[in-house]
Length: 490
Image 1 (cartoon, rainbow, N blue to C red):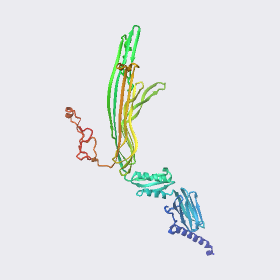
Image 2: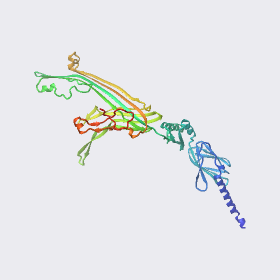
Image 3: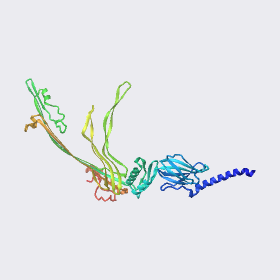
Image 4: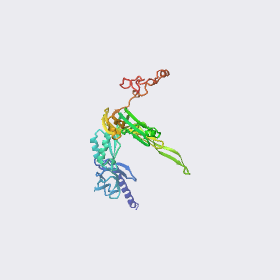
């Protein structure tokens, strides 16, 4: 009775032992490992809840793997829209990736026991992207990883242009730049020094010849006033600024008079502007240089109001406008010795031309004269190119006078004014990039090298402000220069 009574218990224990042996054999027998499609990542075992081990399986969209398991009876797919499982026979099943996402699949045997579980991550198939990158950049170490429906590029390349090309190719294959995360590192990034020369010569010529004629005569009770004012309209100026003493004013004092004002002037001027800003930046990064100042512009008056409504403590408010020399550029080293540049340079100065005068105090607001150039170009290291060149000539000529009388021969010059204005400008902007390397400090020179102030006797007797300047005080030669250098070499 005891033996027969214990037979069901022993059978249950034996069944559990056999089930545990089958699961252990499935987990550790290499012959039962699922067969993967080419290019897919091998499943990585991960311990889940319970005694069953859950395997991780990465699939591409439209890719499949073959799974060999003993006694497959049933299968559970959490989200068939992400991945699907097809049981071909009692020992083989197919797992197929349908859409980007994550799900899990569990297989059961005929006894209802769980025999295998898979966490499925379906990603975009990147085999085509990998092959295209390998073909275009065979020497670059670029790795691709799927991120949702996009791709992440990692690794390193030798130049920024290779990183840009890899990102553009991946964007074209996956359907847009917003689906590409470009984390490629550039090995040994080059540094670029940009030398910009802005040279301008402006020549102004003004010629003026004019007569203002006014008269006041008394004939008994009749008064005759004659006033012929001929301004210089080409130069926007009166012939005699501030001349308030006219013939009419003298007539009121009882003095008949004839007044004539003659003005003849010829002016010529030359202005030379030279700016040479230099700046260094890493390939692919932007650099900015500004040298100048700011001048205030009145914007209004702010007054405080008391509780009684009285206005007091008024303060002039101003804003500041920048002027000077500015340089902004972004270099990209394409290949060895060739550089792509995005350059913006500007030279501005305060000018009295087109100034604005207003307000109760007659405040004059100056204008800004600006020379600006912005472009993208590609030149070799050490090569120069004229980024902007401008030759401009403006001529203005005007004749003003009394109709009829101003056209008389010889005498007509007394009744007219004529002025001639000629402005000539020649501007040149030259850019020269260099691929540079760091050098030792002793190979560099400063503007104050060799400077020494003059002694009291030299400054008093000889009017000298310095003893030595423009000659290197160091023993080491600076580069290949064998001549004096500096700002003052007299």
